[in-house]
Amino acid sequence: MKLPLYRKFLLLYFVILIPVAILLSTICRNGYQKEVISDTKTQLFKYSHYIRESYFPSVYKSSSSLVNKKISEDIRPSSRILNTTVWITNAKGLILVDSQEPSLQNGNHYIKNYDAGFFHKSYHVNKTLKPIMRQEMLTVILPVTSGYAVKGYIIIHTPMETINQQMKSFTYFSTIGITAFAIIYGILLYIIYTLTGKPAKKICNIVSKYNNGEFEDTTLLRGKDEYEFISTELSYLGEQLQHLDDYQKNFIANVSHDFRSPLTSIKGYAEAMLDGTIPEELYNKYLDIIVFETERLTKLTTNLLSLNGFEHGRTQLEITSFDINYIIKRTVASFEGTCTKKHIKLILTFSEKETFVNADQAKIQQVLYNLIDNAIKFSHKDSQIKITTIEKKEKVILSVKDYGIGIPKNSLKKIWERFYKTDLSRGKDQKGTGLGLSITKEIINAHQEHINVTSTEGSGTEFSFTLPLTNPSSTS
Image (cartoon, rainbow, N blue to C red; front, side, top):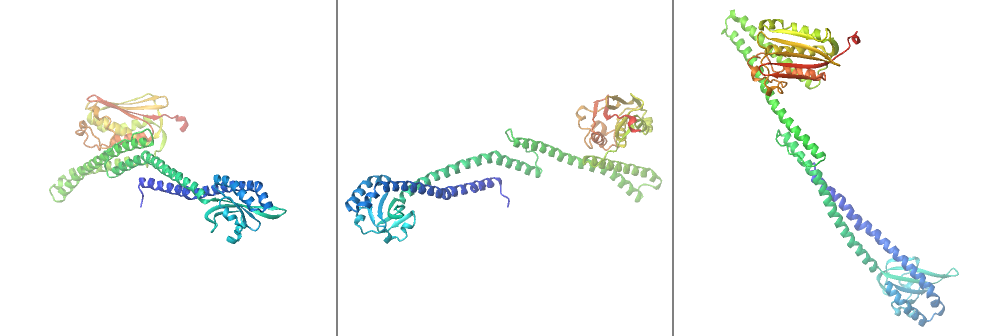
């Protein structure tokens, strides 16, 4: 199961917090305790050396209980200040001096009787010697030697309770530290989640709406960062998807309309011929209509496939060098019959006798055919159409200008859209599919060139596009 982002942040919070708490409460505590015990041992050993130098010779030489009592009284104040108990014993472990309990100096308390292995170590932790030492102590043992022989021991104890008090202070401050870390770390993660997680959640919601076909949400995230950029791009994407959705609906409606009309005619006339509604002597007339409608369907299908090829990058251009003036003349020749019927004159004006360009000859001829065909369709009878080529620097500018009905100003940006037809053209262009100019623009764009249109309603329209010039000698 995938975790939401906020749960991942929550999981991250505990994944970091728990090890930190364990580290402070166990590992660091144990380390601190060892350090405290080590420091205490060092102090006790220093104190034991002081006792050895200051008092042990007197105890060893006199063997008098009065001397021992006097030494005990001398040591007692400093021992109380240091919270320690000092024992001085002979080599057999008999307690001769006790800084806290003089009663132990009665000559009957041998330490070896309470713990046979007591003198095998230099220190003991949590040590008791019941009944003479019931409280747990940290004990250090300093042997006093002379001539390679042990003459006695200096034993100093300090209660483990003193060390434990220090550990309680450590526990108190470590608890405060963990709590402060938990609060600060929680606030930091919340800020990070606010800056990253919440915008990501909003973006996910927008994408989810887009996935469900809801493109109206264009909410922008504030702030000058990547999320604002993503939000802006998503908003633009939403607009494009909305436009694409509308376009698809219009596309389907237009294709359905343009296919339905000829199919209805073909089906109707064919059925009428089969059931005898149309007499046999009129078959040729209606067969011509069926052929005409079939050609319309073929042209529409071919144009759609051509546009689809450009859109998905499957159409490859076959670039060659050719004389564009010659291609214009050949294309114009195919309209001779149509121009004669409408009494339209085609005027060709070339800046040079030959103008060689680098382009796909068949595709450019299709562009010229579409533009000239459009110009003828929307020109008045007894008018003219001018076709010109002008060489300028490394380009040639080709222009097709008519003096017909023109294009309304509000339609100029839409003429490149598939199936688009202006209201003025619907009555005149019965054969058109509304795809010719779309294909024309795709072809010019594929050549990485530009095509422009200028038009005045009622006065005419001019289409112009560019192609790259080439040196004819380079192709010989």
